[in-house]
Image (cartoon, rainbow, N blue to C red; front, side, top):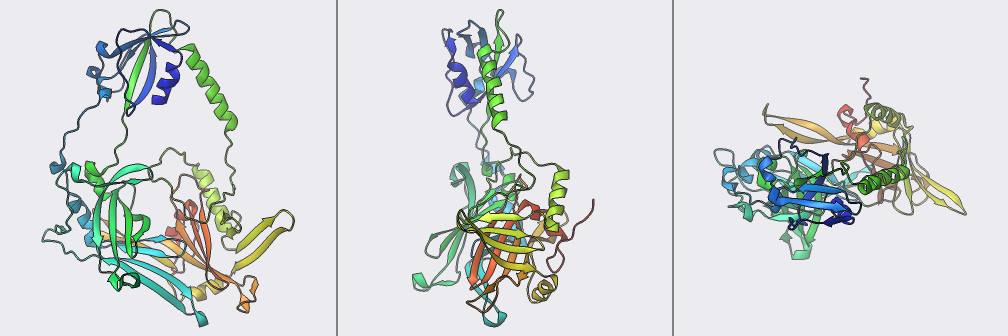
Amino acid sequence: MFADIFKFALFIVWTSYSYAILDDSIVYNLNWPGKTFELKDSATKSEDYNDEDAVIIKTDKNEKYKCMIPSSAKGKNEKDDFQSSASPVELLSPVLKQKPCTYRLETYWTYEICHGKHIRQYHEEKAAGGVIKLQEFFLGYFSEEPDSKGVFNKLGNIPKGAKDIPAKKLDGIMTPYYPIDMGNGTACELKNGGKRKTRVLYVCHPESRNEIMSVSETSSCEYELVILTPTLCANPFYKVKGTPVNEIYCTSLDDSPRKPKTLVKQNIENNFANQQHFTAPKRHEETEIELEHTRDDYRRVDSPEISKQTDKALVRDFLSGDFCLRGSSGWWNYEYCYGKHVKQYHDDKTMGRAIIMVGKWDKEAHLNWAKNRRARIYREEYDATTKTTDKKVIMVEHFYHKGDFCEAIGKPREVIVKLKCKASSSKHAVTIYLREPATCSYILGVESPIICDLLDTADSNGLFTQTED
C-alpha cells in the first residue's frame, strides 16, 4: 500500500533524471516480479504502463530496480452517466409500495419504521396489576401515492445529476443518500403542538434488508433515520466509492535480488512481531461491552469467520445454558444464561462479589406470560421474484421471574429478555444492557450473532428449538 512506498523510500536513492510524482490520495501496491515485467492481471491494461513513467531506484546496498508506475495513477475523469441509471425513486418505489416494517431496539425506546407508511417510537412497561402500559409517539407519516406504474414520482428532492446527490459522513466515510421526509407525526409539546417529523436517509448497502442503521434527534421533535437498503445499489452513483489500488511493478536490474534485502528483513521481523502479539480467542471468551449500543462498521469484511463446527458447538452450548452472554455498564455486570437465569453482579477487591438474581427461568411461567403478548416480532420482506411478502422473525422475548426479593415492592424481581440478531464476523460479539422501567421489574436487551442462527427456529411462544444437521 502507499505506506509501503514511504518505508521503502527511507533507504532508496532516486537516480533517474525524472520521476513520476505519487499522489497522496491514490493507493499503491508494490510488486516485485523479479527480472521480468508481466501483466498477469487482466484488469490491468498494458497501455497504462510506459517507459516515460518508469523510475530507476538504487538502495543503500547498491541494489538497482526499474519501477513501472501506471499512468492511471494520475487520475481519470469519470463520465456522468446519471441519466442512464435508474432513478432512486424508481428503485425505492417497490419497498415503499410493499410497506415492510423493521425495528431497532435501543436502551429505552423501540423504533419501528414501516417503509411507505409511518415511523413509530414506543416503550412498554408493566403497570399496577401486571397490565402492560404502552407509551408511543409517531415520528412521521408517509403521505405520497404511487402513479399508475407504481412509482412515487411526487416525492421531490429527485437529483438531476450526480453532483446533486447529497452525502453524509457515516462511520468516517462520505456516503451518498436519498432523503424522504415524513411529517405530521404526534404533536410536540415543546413546539406548542407542532407535529413531529423525520427525514429518512436511504443508503446503499448490498447485504442489508432495509434495516435501521441509526436514529438521532436533530432538534426538538425532529429526527433523522439512516436506513440501509440494497435497492439503491442498482444505481452506481449511490454506491460508496472504494479506493482503487494501483500496481507498481519493480523489476530487478543487473545482479540485484528480486526484493531489496532490507525490505525482506523488515517483513520477516514484522511477521514475527505479529505472531508474538496474536492470541487466539478462547471458545468461551467473555467480552465486556459498555452499556451504550455499539454498531459494527457495516462495510467491514476483513474479519475471518469461525469454523462451522465451532459455530454449531457454540449454539449447542448456548441453548444448554453452558455458554452465557455477559456485558457491563461500568459498575454493574450482567450475566444471561439461556434457560437458566439473569444475574446482576459487581466485583469488589475487599468485599468480593455482590450478586443480585434478577430472574430465573420457568417454562410454564413463560408460557402463561406469552399468552397475552407477542413473543415473536416479525419483519416483512418482499421477494421481487415471487412477488410475495414473507414474515421473518427479528426478535423474541422471554420471561424470567422469581429473582431475589425486592423490599420496595414486596415481591421477587422479574425480567423480560429481548433477544435480537446482531450481525458480526465474531460469534463472541455481544451487546447487552439492563434497564428498569418499573421498580424491580427489568428489561434485558441482548444482541448477538448466536441469536441470528436461532430466530427462524422460534415457535409461537418465542422458544428456540435446535435442529440437527
